[in-house]
Amino acid sequence: MSYIKGWWAFLMLTVLLAGCSSPQETGKLRIAVLPILDTLPLFVAEAEGNFAEQGIEVEFITAASAAERDQLLQAGQVDGIITDLVALALYNRAEISVVAVRYAMVPTLDFPQFRVMASAQSGITSAAGLRGILIGVSEGTVIEYVTTRLLEAEGLASSEITTIAVPKIPDRMALLNAGELDAATLPEPLGSLAMQQGAFVIVDDAHYPEISCSLFAFRKAVLDTQPKTVRGFLNAVDRAGAIINADKGRWVDLLTEKSLVPPSLVGSYTLPDYPVISELYGNLLPSEAQYSDVVAWLKSTGRIDTAPAYKKVMNETFVR
Image (cartoon, rainbow, N blue to C red; front, top):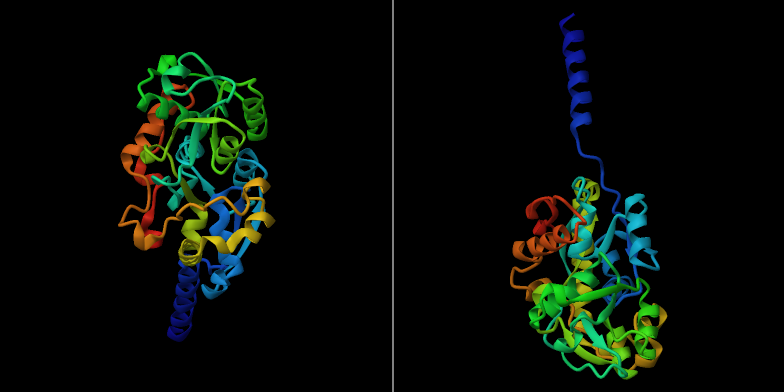
């Protein structure tokens, strides 16, 4: 009888321990990719075998727009994304569902991410000339936020900044080039293309790098269940960033294949410096002040009432 009791206790303990154990990691990730320069390290990591070196499999799910990316994320069809602070705050307004783990891109003095531009026909050459002028943006996004903060930094009051919704970037560029929009905000490398076509740069984030960035972020459930896989992914991407920075002229074919640079710029456009962990000096994510400013802007525009604390949506331990 004592043997049966002992066996039964052992069986129950085994069942309990099995129920408490973490699920085995799959070593697989699905990442949403947009046709933007921020994604180049992902494609380089794949081409150079960096993911395989980390023992993980990464599937890229193409998204044509940020809206499509967000739909894939909300449907659970992707595990990770490249996003920004505005979108991060909006994702988490109801509950913590998406967490940022490190920078994907940051503006530098030589390589801005966003430019506020005036059309060649407008005659506008300074921020002061944009007072009361309609500026084409995508509303409720990082584009609108960056436009507001850059022009405020240049001396305009928020009441003097007027925007108009032109969500699709090709439409925004076409209207700017035709002079039907006096001004618009564009991301790189499309800002460089607009310059090539005659547009004038009023201000960009190269001189105000605290205003913008892009981030690698994952669904919280993925970070909870696949921490080693996420670390392997970030190690592979970091290695790819270092490879790109060491030889920027090597990637023309990949830039063309993935449509990351407009055809007329291919071969002449200088790639930005990609953030590498060893060179970030501990600044792996935006500061709490940067996040708080985005939240304040979203509240001022009525898009959110509350937002989660900084430490709830930022986690840099995956690259430590």
